[in-house]
Image 1: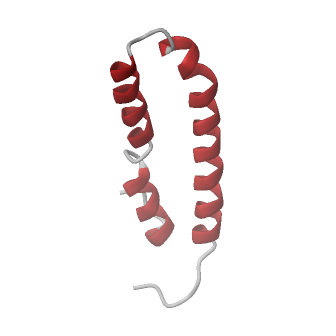
Image 2: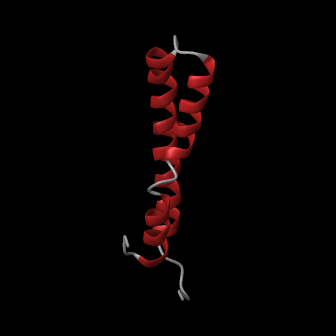
Image 3: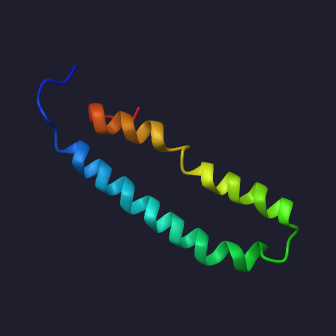
Length: 71
């Protein structure tokens, strides 16, 4: 266990917020143009998948914030 604060946690949180904001803006900007004419149910499924896809790299990122290693 870690007894002292580390720079990785505040930097990691700021980085995560920045990347999520950029991801959200990119999805909000380009997804409607690509899938706007598709049926509503299909759009809903795609937006749910896009809303969850950012979770895939999160585990490794949180491990890095705590340990300094990516795995």
